[in-house]
Image (cartoon, rainbow, N blue to C red):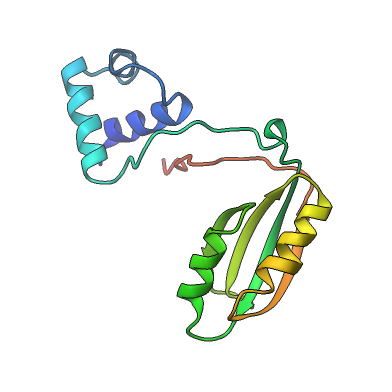
Length: 149
């Protein structure tokens, strides 16, 4: 990836609906060049898709939490797969820390959060313990590539 590719990615992160023509103008390349670079970025897996970013609160998911999960050795594949299927689970990360998995959960309210954590996550085979941190406010940098210059 060169500087132009990085500018293309940054532009699409700001506005994933921009036309190839507008993209070409913004990054100062020809439309054909922008199209070819965009195709290459997709083929190489740099750009994996285009999606709408939705405000959780506006769709009724006003409660968010991070849940750390300690699991039994060698159960991470089953636990991670089962967690991804749970309603309310937004993100699952396997981590190297005093716990094994960090999960972001989004629910309508604290009662529903309690159900997801205590009745669903803790009931999964291989889960030994959980700890929950309620999120008061999120300041997202979702998907942004940090500047390295």
